[in-house]
Image 1 (tube, protein in one colour):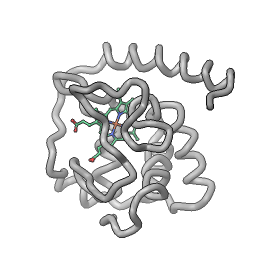
Image 2 (tube, rainbow, N blue to C red):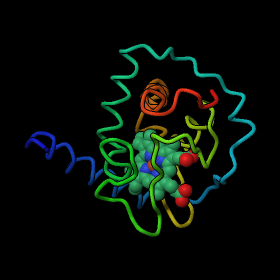
Image 3 (spheres, helix red, strand yellow):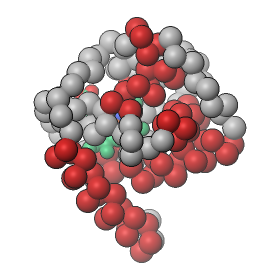
Image 4 (tube, helix red, strand yellow):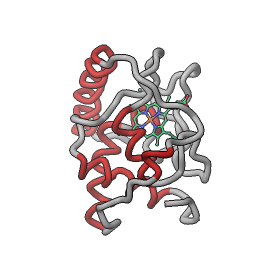
Length: 144
Ligand code: HEC
């Protein structure tokens, strides 16, 4: 399972997460997708390098809640704010790369906070790398 250095990284990102959760203000993201974000095209080609950079960011910042495999069963998954399974074909907040990018950047900061905003924590490029990584997990038929 986890080796000691991974556990150290998890602790660091846990404390980062607490800070982020406390620091975020209120803003909205609603189920059903986001027409403006839908128009944004992914500028980062889904190369092997991009997907593996996305995996590094995912392991550090997302697996805590979404699970190591993205199934929504990470150790911080809360019953009242259940992280989605990111490997299925269903995208509650929109299925295009642009919408997924936008959602990860802005988070679901409520109130209540369900997911921190990652814009700033992750560079734009890394946000797209994460999108490319998520695409590598999920059904290929999802809309881009
Ligand atoms: C504090 C826990 C937490 C962390 C950390 C977190 N998420 Fe989430 N995420 C959630 C929850 C909870 C939801 C679902 C909220 C809801 O719909 O009620 C969610 C939803 C999502 C969705 C929407 C899925 C859909 O079906 O539309 C995406 C995409 C997503 N997260 C990606 C990420 C990525 C990528 C990261 C890391 C950069 C991340 N999340 C980190 C808790 C988290």
